[in-house]
Image 1 (tube, helix red, strand yellow):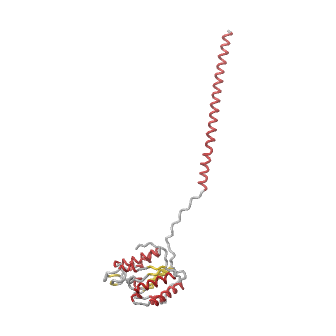
Image 2: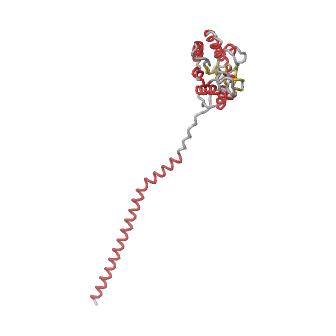
Image 3: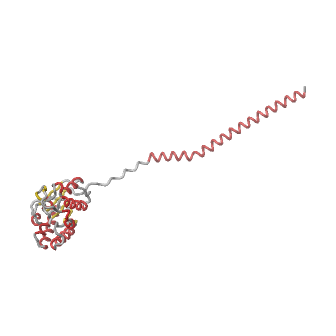
Length: 263
């Protein structure tokens, strides 16, 4: 009986020991699990902080401004054309195809508000320069004069004095005006054409203006004639710029004005 009782006690003790071992094993598992959770949490803290910081910066940083588009306008609110039959538009098939009309369209498209034309077929510099009417506060003056002086053999010294006086007269009522001075539309191999072009260039540049040569355009036979074609201003000749010639002049002028050189 005593031995049976001892065996019973031993079995009971073994059960308790086994149960105790199981309890220790469970505690260890819980402890290890908690430790792992803490380790993972600690490892995730910097990443979470980085995400929060990024979101905060994104919320606080204003969107960058859109790049400004380049201006397409010009500073030539008030413009003057002064010239002879070429500025009138002689021998362009239609008036809107003349260099003055083409240039005017581009100026207006770029913001020009007022365009005045003082031009007459056959006019020499002296005639236009002494016209009483002259607009004030001009921003741009396009001078196309000298062709009839070349054909009429105006003395170079006389032409120089008249050209300078005309530019001075314009500037006296338009202090901020910019001059663009076109050369003569005449045979470039002649001495008079070369002399007058030199005068126009020197005088224009001395007044902070820009000289635009037309001699090579005149030399291109495609820019003149043919004779006898019907135009808006009568029959064409072999001298005045035709439609192609007017377009060539306009493109060169528009290039100097930094405007798109299209028809």
